[in-house]
Structure formats: structure tokens, C-alpha cells
Length: 242
Image (cartoon, rainbow, N blue to C red; front, side):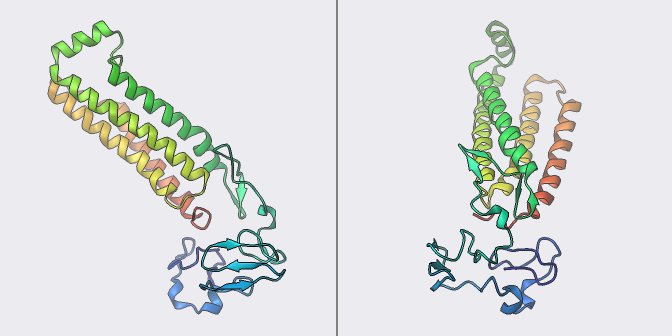
């Protein structure tokens, strides 16, 4: 399926083009599905080379069509034919369907790996009482502010779960899952909100102002990353569609 207005390839059944914003409901089936892209139907049809293609989404068998359903002679992205999107859980794509994938490569193979490891480490530090340095100093802190220990235990568990979420989201991006980009943007926003809530509760326990410029930096960084990734992955909805 393609946008008749700008030519952008779309997921079958899309209602709106993410590139030009055109409404797909105003176009006919002939306009939405060029000659090489017949409109999807439930039945299986014979391919050009004698194989079959299940339009209901059950895949292809030998003959005439590649893994994306294009006849081999009309495939608009022949350079992607047979290309592996991942190896051992790490993205291998620098370019796919005519668009750059380097940003996704960096996020899934580097940034989210670091995020997962660092959040799990922070969670462990809060859980075992080493977040404040030595065990002796930690006991002094908790002795002076008894409510802080329970707060730190909860925060430690949340940080560890965020680390697991980061590891899961990186796999969604590697394997081009539809929900991956949305979950990525949530990963930038949710930890910041939780961090601010933690500081506010800790301030109530300790009785001191604890919000610094670092908190403001984290908020600004999260907003920028959400905006950047929304634009980047919005232009690749037909790639992240599994």
C-alpha cells in the first residue's frame, strides 16, 4: 500500500500518511495499491513463479515473490532482499527500505544497553544499602531518617524494573516491533517522573530542598529525546510494523 499523494509506502489498512498527512479514505483501491501491490485479501493466490502468497498474513511459499510479498522483478527495495535485521539480539541495519537506520542501531545496540545496566545497578545499590557509600554511613542516614529506608527500597525495585524494561524495549527495536518506538518514548518520560516523585517524598522526610539543576537537565533531555524519536520513528512506521 502506498500514499497516492507522496508515494510513501504504508502499512496495509493505514488511515493516514505519516509523511504528508493525506487521508487514505478518500482514495480508491486502485490508487492505494499500484500494479505490483494488489490489495490484501483473505485468500491465497498464485505467484508469478508458481509459489503461493497468503494475503491473510500467513507468509509466502517458494516461487515468484520475496519475503515482503513483492514479485522479485518488481521489488522496490531489491537491496534489502534476504537482509538480516539482527544477529544474536543486536541490530545489523544501517539502511532499510531506502531510509537510514543508524539512529536505531545506536539506540538499540548502545544507549539502551547502557540504560538497562545502569538502572539495574542503581536499583541494586538502593536495595543493598550502598547508594550512600559505606554500610556504616548508610546506617547513620537511615538512623536519622527512618522513613528513608522504605522509600529507598521501593525506589530500588522500580529502578531495577526500569532496567529490565530498557532491555526489553531494545529487543523490540532490534526486531522492528510496532510498539517499540512508543515504549521507547515512555522509557524517557516515566523514569524522570518517578525520580521527581522520589525527590519530593525524600524532601518531606529529610526536610531539606534536594532538587538541583541536574533534575532540570533530565527533564529537558527527556523532552528532547521524545520529540526527536517521535519524528524519527514516525517516518518509519512501515518498517516498525511487526
